[in-house]
Image (tube, rainbow, N blue to C red; front, side):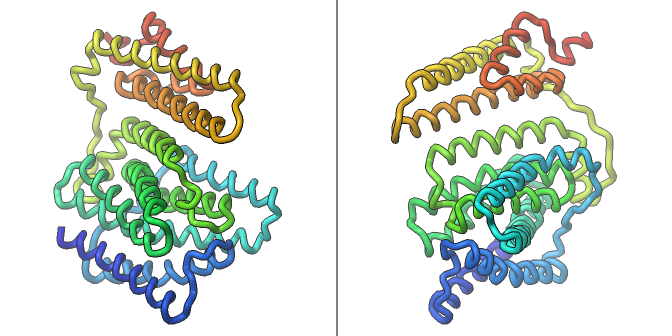
Length: 363
């Protein structure tokens, strides 16, 4: 743990020093709410710390960072969230007629954020925890919590409540990015997805801190999205995860087979979970219909919209869990193409045994 403490101490000391230097000597507000000043501050902040981390790791910490080759079409699948975020930012920039030069510079700047924070949290901290013999789940959780707590330093420049929301907001993102690193065996993938998340957030807010435009309901929704994607990628990649651990620890790669727990093979337990997913999906579907008919306005409309989105996403998460945990064919994820009603429809097919788990079919 001494290595991890030293790694985090370097980052925190750097950020604190940078804050006081620019605040009291140069009177430059690093988190000014304009796109140009935000871009400039990112370049000033990120380049030195990236160089410091690389040098310290090369000569002192010597933590192995993985950049293994990964099939391009699978890379595109894992990077889909980042590609969507970039597309949203690009479309918004066209609508608002953002200067192409400013767009490009901000794109490069957010890549620097991705390099710094992913090198720090996934490359060094997560890698060190796993190398120390900690379990993957423990390592992902701790590194993600530390990733969130690292953002508490922003309390110098914004209200405490906003900082708390920001800390909570980035924890599930840390879990998702850690899983991307584990599955791809390449740090470049979480770097890109992280960068595009920040790129989209800065573009949409016009340079304002993302925490200023974050609410508790959006934090909850983000948890559902990130953890669902993390579970989907993690439980569909046992071989890649095993390869990650072998490469990081310098062991030879070995072929692994997905093993189901006795619970997952229990027919009664599977039906109980399926009924629960069906009921929850129907509740979400009913709330969706009700919210559409009420057509409220103002704060009530915003509240209902956030509750509707949360229920729908939780319903989708339960449906994805059903498919992954009980080992149904992944082609059944196509039911996601039917908004709201797709999950309940699949649950009905599963209860009628029209579709069956792969292990059940083999028997």
